[in-house]
Amino acid sequence: MVLEINEDEFDEKMQGKCVVDFFTPWCGPCKMLAPVLDELSEEMEGVSFFKVNVDENVEIGSDFDILNIPTLIVFQDGEIVSRTTGFMNKEKLKTFING
Image (cartoon, rainbow, N blue to C red):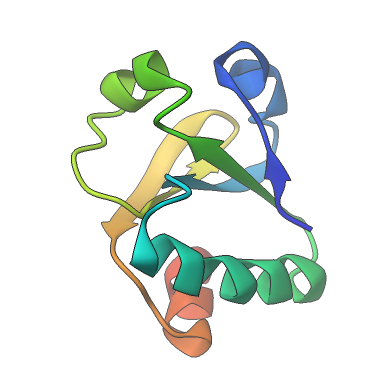
């Protein structure tokens, strides 16, 4: 399951390997990506999945220079490992997350 978090919860959740989906509810590619992330969150052990609505959490969007959505950022213990923008199919996304 992909847990939606806000700015106040962000830092405390970034433990271990995390994938964060920066999205908005009106974004078409974000809607397409959501079920793919849900599937991967059930399949990938040792990885936490979160999403942040950048319309409601403007400051965190600014902090991470989110200019396009969806933007996915992989964190390891709070440090950015990699990032990408746009829709990806399940296999490409899995490869991206695994680095």
